[in-house]
Length: 237
Image (cartoon, rainbow, N blue to C red; front, side, top):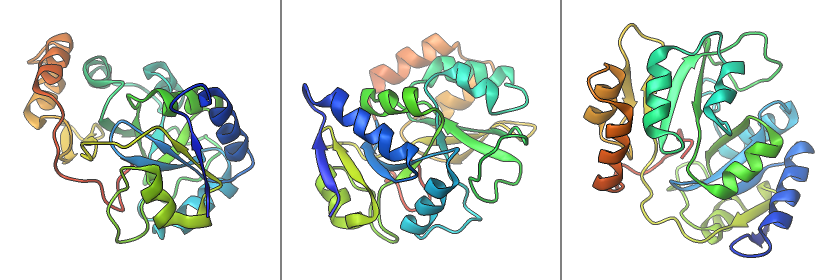
């Protein structure tokens, strides 16, 4: 079974360092996010992304989403960051919003059959961001076995994925379990592909320029987190 590493206290830096080393070696690491627990691979290590597809039983027709450390990192992953993306990132990043944008075709990675797009988000989670800041863009999807619910604790990850991951970073249970909201920015009009932790109407109002990003962020902070729907096999958490 995969080792569970407690990162709730003074052991965080050492645990993150071990996770980074494993990811660079092409292994998988389970880690907390601001939604559920995810399983990660170095996005630029094909051995790692191959392992991630296999561990999840995920078809290559469902490409892997990517975590980034900051909005600025998106610049290197897409040919052009549209103004609507800037507004949405200002309102909801870091947080449970995934943006689908055109992918830079010259990148040396294999995320599956992307059809020219990439799903990207910046999670509101210190442990996940500590890992991504060192590794770089990181492929992350929910850490559940095929057909199982997305895990909300390290113990649930261990029970579902067993020895398919090198280690599991334990930062306590995740309460809500709602998946991130996914917005497609590759269409002529922004479109919500998946409902999640954010209010669709608030997100689209920002995308249409009808709501100031700061006002949207304040509104969502006051509303609290949604609890449905839960993440599934296709989710990055």
